[in-house]
Length: 218
Image (tube, rainbow, N blue to C red; front, side, top):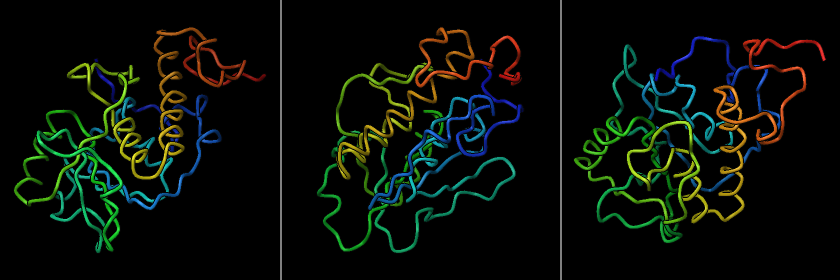
């Protein structure tokens, strides 16, 4: 299924204007910097949750590359930070507060792309000897917009939520998971996968799926 869209979308939450959730999204300040390494094609997919995560996290940055953009820089994280790549690398420890026991601020490097893309980038950071960490274990993922490569697969915002939950506290984890539910329920409704009354936070009464999300006067 093709997930790229040329329709107008909100620059922050990436939903169509009639479904915009920006007024409901928090802005979270964290000690940990989250650096997103994202392919240009991935950033424009309607099902991508990396953009949503950046919309919530104040202390985050984007390294966008691919197509006609410059190549991925050798050090995509902010200068002076200590990088740790968040990826299910075999043998890597789970994210825990011990990662904060350093004078240098922590930069959590998130590989935001398809599984094939992320696996390719993983090899590059292995060569650079950048340490890896995996998201802490938890229950099944809640993401329903794409098929995961395994039952234990997590989307970007879920992986970041678990990592920051271990580093920053449960409130940060829960806020990110709530943002995911808010975001994906609107897309699932747009696809016809759920009914209006199942949309988290509800929908404006004047929004109709069959109208192509044109907003009628209330």
